[in-house]
Length: 196
Image 1 (cartoon, rainbow, N blue to C red):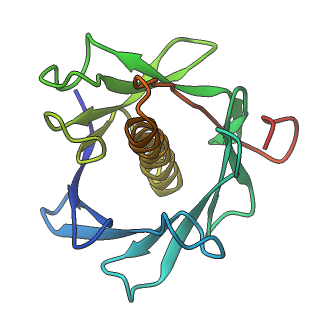
Image 2: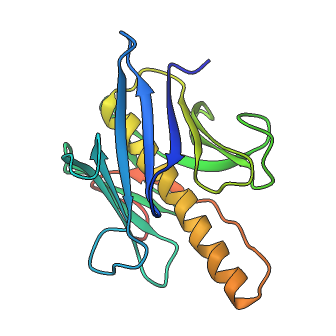
């Protein structure tokens, strides 16, 4: 059973919102600014409350690559969304991966859902479920109390994987090719990490 859920919805333009309830029942809103056509801006910017709120994190896709760098403002570590990476959770160094799942999450989508797993223990830490035929909107369920940093990292990296898939599919459709779906691996850390 999840301990925290973020509901991701489309906002105006290509942007998204994420809402969650805290222990007291108060709603907290996050705004995800999507900049697919602005090369000098980060591809995804996570804001508190709305587009004018303070920046909480950034995701920058690497051009001509499936890699992505994610940075949260409260932490100097960079998250690498690539083939392999490291993530620090409560002082532990862990390698986490977003993988497709059909056994968890919302099953009503042909694109599948994703689960964030600890590669060493195979523990499911979060599940990102899609809503129907939509690529990005859905919900992120976090299984455990890992703190605000982990929650924001999971949300931003999950959105980055989904947005990369959406952009890849859009390019494939425009080029008349079949859709190819890939999953990323998430990692955070100062040493070692993926090929970003």
